[in-house]
Image (cartoon, rainbow over all chains, first blue to last red; front, side):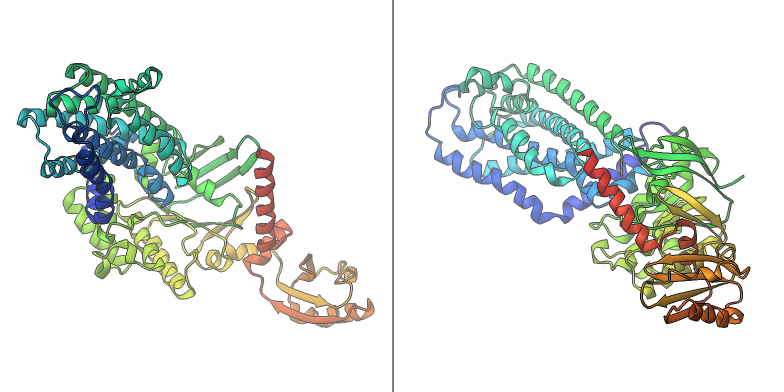
Length: 257
Length: 328
């Protein structure tokens, strides 16, 4: 009897993601373009604005960078989770599902691959923002930020996987993007402090893992988080575990054909 | 031990549509067994159950000695499958697709390399191994998938419509590969709606219609069971309604009608043609054309279902559409 976790299978699933990621350069550049434009134009356009909730001494670009890293990663992670739909469409899901590899390992392989590509894109945004004038607090802060980034990536891959397991084809994809991804982004505090929103809406923000991810990254990178960083970490960790379990459960239950 | 044992296997969709309807069959080790039937007859659903992709609604089946429901992983280890639609990653090379597969079946590195080269050789794709699959032709993709199905040395290989959508020449090639690998003691189960494919390849054929197996035997026995030759008569006027004069003769084994054509199953047609003409003349039937041939599996299908495979396909499509309407 083979175990639930088969490292070789996880590795080859990860490797497949890496290879296809590297070969899809134009798509990657395209997905980085939006956050770069936002950083460049919003960052400089609002540079002198005093926004309530942003501590004095923190300019808008500093505030925006963790948000844009979060935006890049929510999109790339959701796409990675939902890439099950592509595999279904092109028949490759059947090829994966008919192998003797345990479903848990298949899910872990997908998460490993998706999290890596998503992290690479988040880091790319960080590097680019440094050239736009972003100053982060130090190496330790950067390492902490990576922790939040990984948790954000894994959470949304789980969510993407859960949603994809409930969809038959890619038709619902646009709907998901407009009714789930954008609202999650706007109530995450990526662009402005969550407290500036009407109370009801801001409460919605507190059931959104991205909120805690972005806030944690702000704490780590610029030393200005709305919540204690430990709170961000614990809440995000809980979300992360819940999303992965949900995704894995629904994926396991969905049929390959 | 039979390679496959199927008892009462059934798949019901949405509570009332029996895609596979209480089928029974067994396949011996080393056999090349075919499921022949029109599109929508339930062949792919049957294969999906046997390969553990779908759970049966009821019934029992064993593949390579393992229960398809209780021992899924053991079944998965012992089977290879080539799906009806392409199931390759276009963004990877041929070699990478095979490597992915062999690692998923936990093959060791040395063995993997060796075996990949071996199967690439069998399907004559060694020189195209490092090309992205995106650049492959339809026939090359199919060959790569056959190679992939073989890598982990499965005991049973399932081929779902292996030559669907391929041109005649490529089809011949694919047939050669299938025969070749069957000689290496791999049990092969294939589905097809091409009569000549089943006839050419399969040692035994099960004819499937509306989710049921209506006949099962060697192609030769199936054809012989019709009792000799087929005489197809096309006549003018109100059609071949009144050939009743022929019914009494012991050499007339059967009379079927389809598309306004009358098919007579006749033992030694060459001897009895004159008699057929004289009956026609007496009944005042004007024969437009007459055709004498050895029976094909198409004739067998017609005999057991009362329809040609094309007509049956149309009625299957109707059946599914009606079902889809009811669901809404």
